Length: 386
Image: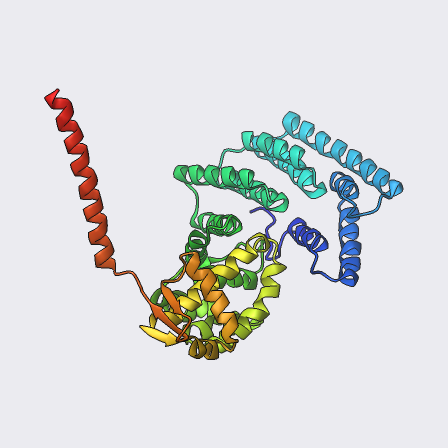
């Protein structure tokens, strides 16, 4: 992408700060600092449209002088950009015309005017021939989508990018699209697909504009743990050299992954508790916090119970470093929801597993389908007899 650097896009950094400002778990003193940083960014980039929105939502206070100054600068800059476009159309070639239109698109993105940015990106696309450059425009649109968490725009842009790749396109952009799509899948609770896309991109990651590499590894590990079986987790995550070089820099993540794989459940719960704050304060994972917490507990409880035909509740509570009452309540909920295949003998304080037999379930399904087919044949034969 033109002008790409190995840093997160400023407007996505701003989006994260705005998210934290609205989060109830962030301390007031931290919000004061965040509010100052948001205002400084808005003022520095002349983000008048966004400023008005934030004032209406009581995120920032109105400073009419600052707003008037930003609007004046925007009008002045737009005049210059329109003059460059006119000059390029009259005196220069198609490439210069496209560059002038792209500059205007990026300006609208910078000031936070979503509608005008999307409109100008379409104009720029109409001046673009090369597939790679069209793809770059889609990436800009995707970044806008993630800033506003506009999943409809993101979904359509991903489909558009895939259609463009049918016309051509280089591997570097294809690999970058996998990360964008993975982030979209994770943000819409499709953790299995997100994990597959992230794992495919580990060795080719260059998408620094949406998040740093350590955050990418954080997302990869979290989505993989609830999506992969033990063998795949070992091969693709636990022993992956790309993950091993970074995972130690992320608090609790190494303990979280390795204690699960090594069946050190007490250590796992300790690391799990440490990670909850990071997940809760993550802009993309926060809406799925409760769901993720349930899924990861399902994984770890299932893994523990797989080793036993029956086990005492006390032994399980001791393995996890929690009370018997806690495990009893937890398992009751998961069993009732159909997440765990076991039953609790409250009198003797024993858990008995009743894992479904794959062959038996296949046999039952075949019998059911056979009965259904026989009924259809009988009905058909009656119609024919008439």
